[in-house]
Image 1 (cartoon, rainbow, N blue to C red):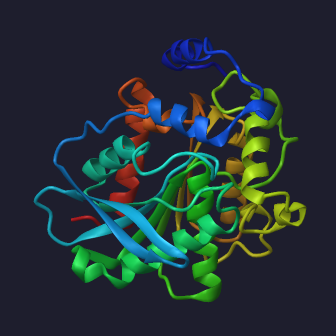
Image 2: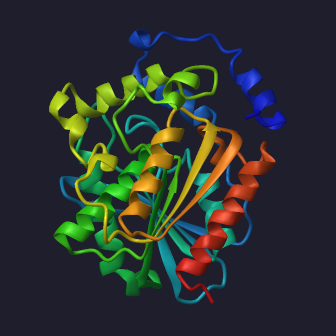
Length: 310
């Protein structure tokens, strides 16, 4: 396995920044740093609208991306990454616009509540409520609510797949497809990828511990909760078809691969696409990494097929 030359060059620059020990990290500061690294939207032919929708314990900001000139389209409900602690609809604006342009689907990006101010399960509650709102208001939004997919990267991938479990078990939401980009699927730190990719590839193993510490707020019993570790769910059958992206130099690689294999073993239609030379976070960097553009194009093509985009 070899790191892609473009990925290697980018990581060499990023790794020049002084490393801050996790015990000294402040979540507000990390949010600002993460926002400064975000890529602006460059996709053409996309119209955006910011709205506020009702949530379980307050308003939820969303950003709606529509393909210019489109009629009734399928809809993708997207949850940003950032370890449940950082990130927002602005940090993922570029990637969401690119998915919209390439897939010809309307996309709704959800600004769910973040830890530590709002620990687990606040993000899950907001995500499910937002997806239900989108489906219930499909006519107003100009989308086909029966062709609804959920998607997200990293912690957002965790959120996206967790609400497919809730939708199956509780009802109230019909999900046709799930697109998961290097999702967090298990609270674990002993896999080969967690050890081999523990540092030097943007996301570190210690950062994952830090994120989990804020998200779970010291609740040690929550680590086995399938809403935290969906890979540990007793039943993975009858979930929506899935397209899962993993990266070779990612601490989360093995759990993403394992989740794809476990769902497939349970009878779910799963396509696993592995980018061997990439690292965690590459998907939104299409202006820097050619492979990121390819990944968005391939994932968007899968959305078009799964949601029958005309």
